[in-house]
Length: 480
Image 1 (cartoon, one colour):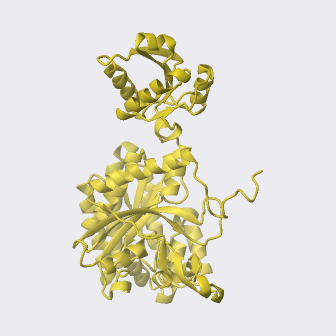
Image 2: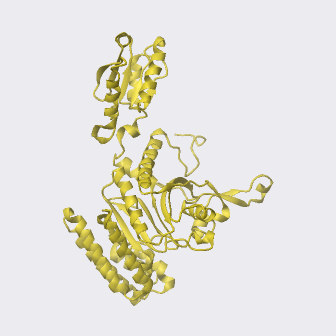
């Protein structure tokens, strides 16, 4: 059992090489997708002034901010003037306010950095974790929502996800539904927390939850009639042949829009929200992502934070989401003194890595092996030749590990196998005489020879790079 002296602080983790390679792989794929959409990278300090963060996340959030005591002679006061970054959105708002004259009219940024929360550690809940945000500031157009949905969808597809659903709702639509049902404004929060459990507990469970929260009059009846009707439409969607899933989803969304229009009626902000949802669906058709979108009026996240569209991505048979976001047009105004249109989405990097690991979605060689090739050292006299071979292989784009000392070839091959390195390059006495390189294929347990004469060595480089490019599209396979 590990000693308490060697364990990281509670809620923190060490990341061993395989863990880091997984994270870097996911980040690299997401970055490539986001940059194709014109998003630019942004980084902010791990430490912010405490007044920057306090009061931005509600009372519960304030208690989870890691505060940093004043230093030196002020330390004994117990006062804090700095804090660790709680999320990436508030620092973004600060940056926009600080550099408003230097940023483009429409600022599109992505940011992938760790954040810290003084939460109670639990399974899957940590005090330090990465966030992966993408945001657009400066436009109220629903083109922004459609682009964010498409970018997040493309990133997940590039990582190998296929079975995900993009749930879409609108903050103003929720307000319109509750007002039209007759729910008192002071009970809106209670009603939304109950409705948000529809997927978990069903209509009967939500009805009980409403009753427990004191919503028991005609308003509860109206609400349940509306959402039970949606549940019936959802059931019909599940019965449709999966081959026609795209058409079925479009018909379902059209049905939900119609029900919303009828129920919200003349409620001004509610009707405006319904129109926003209609536009997002329309714009999403052009990017071929509309078939993944499901209108879900029960979705209620970040109620004190979002002002418009609300988005969440869910994967089949997985509790929780792979990411979420929405429009927040009021946040930057806390720093700037005037509102700035803003919309963003955050992919759950940690959850994505967990799901990809469980489903074995990572390219085997890129994650499980530190190198494509290991170069052996035959004896002390051949060290320089092995170093030169390793460097030449590296110059051709291969990841190469050099065994650090002369040793029995059997020991070196055993080491490569334990490291899951798929190929081993051997230059023994016979190979040196013939100017050859022996390449051992660890998976197939066979050995091939290649001439290493200047005019013939390209064949070796091409052969290795061909293997790296892709057995089964996943790079070189690791050894057994």
